[in-house]
Length: 375
Image (cartoon, rainbow, N blue to C red; front, top):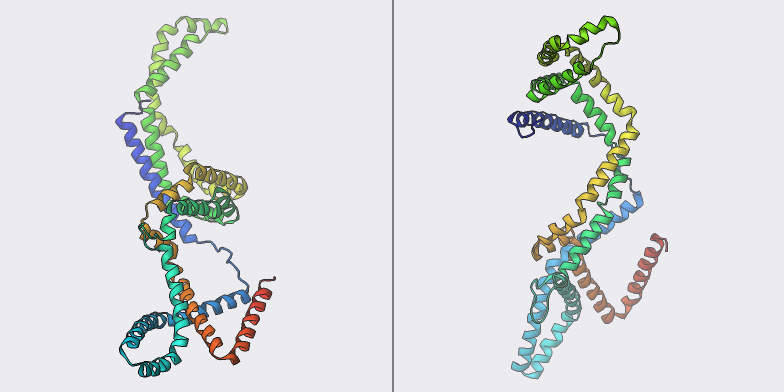
């Protein structure tokens, strides 16, 4: 068979078009089937605690902008206070400073708590480019971080073993049976597969190399035939006369075999009717085969290397977005909670009477944490 011929390329196009069309249809049916998957259950109490924690974080994040601008105002006041001390007479300055400290003694710890946390978070990612003083800790460890992330994603989220376990517990084959039945029962699919089979068989039987092979096989059979009794001896002696005629008649009849095989094409309907039940009855063996194929394919693909290359394509800004894009609210909570804790410390220092309630509240939260985590 000449695999470089135009006929072969034409047949390949026919088959690719047919396969592409009906594989897409199979995928659509799998998606439309949408088998019911077991929902991930969550303990109601844990869900309530989680919702409560998120609510508290959202509430505290309201103070983000106020703490930010309050820090700027506090910084300006510190500069202004220094200038006033130099410009004003001591009695006048002392009066202003005394009045201001009624507020700064609370504002100072709050903004310091907020701004130190803000600065620490910024220093994780900025500056993105190294300078003589500092480089963000994440950009500085970019290569190590990418390798670690890729290894973690591969080992914990997308390893061959994880995919294997998912396939074993998923209703994929159930959906495959449904989708296969939908596709194979389609009259258009049955018509097209029969027509494609006829076309391929006709092209195959009309190939010159097929005629040559049949001619050779028939010629060898005739030459090798020997009479088994006295009555067959004349036939053997005259095969040089009738042999070529029979040989050519058989070769000429080969392309006509398609017409005599219509009954075979009629059997397609029976085979297609049985295909979904065959898949269902052999689900365990098919599942093993599919899982083995997918697992081996993932190992050959080297998923970890693919993830590493994709992460390496990101610049520092994109990497920061990937790492923090979904936790910006939590990062803001770290900042605002720093401001709040600073304010509570200032209250405790200024008003001894609130120290015991704050201490009791802190111990109570600690004990609740220990109990809720089973420690």
